[in-house]
Image (tube, rainbow, N blue to C red; front, side):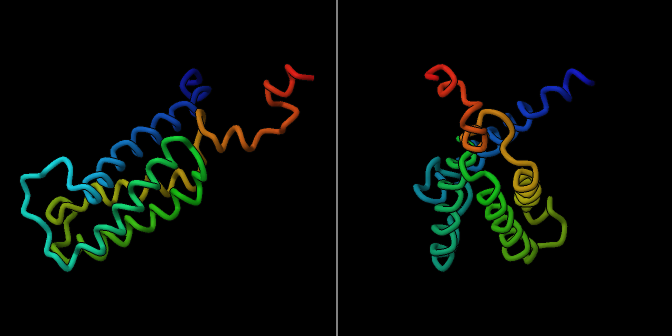
Length: 142
């Protein structure tokens, strides 16, 4: 287990990237209605909500994939998914499997974890936080 623990920053980065790629799919669907789903279309009064959600999902996912502004982005997306669950899924039924809210709960807590833990490896935030003297490019110039 020490071998895995020593690489935890990389596992965190993999979770961040995969979760953001899956979340990006939701944003693409809400903005461009692609790919087409076999489910009935939502009522027209939901259009502004779905557009706003799609923007947050799309832009937030891209930021998480590259690891830029990870903590505030993840915190915002976590809150968005909490609102989605309690505002849109719970009224359809109490149990997450019955109200189709399982993904919303998982995204909420995964994003909350990223807000607390940070981006892990392979992130622009990680490079930005380094001491400039420690950066390999600066060392090679000096």
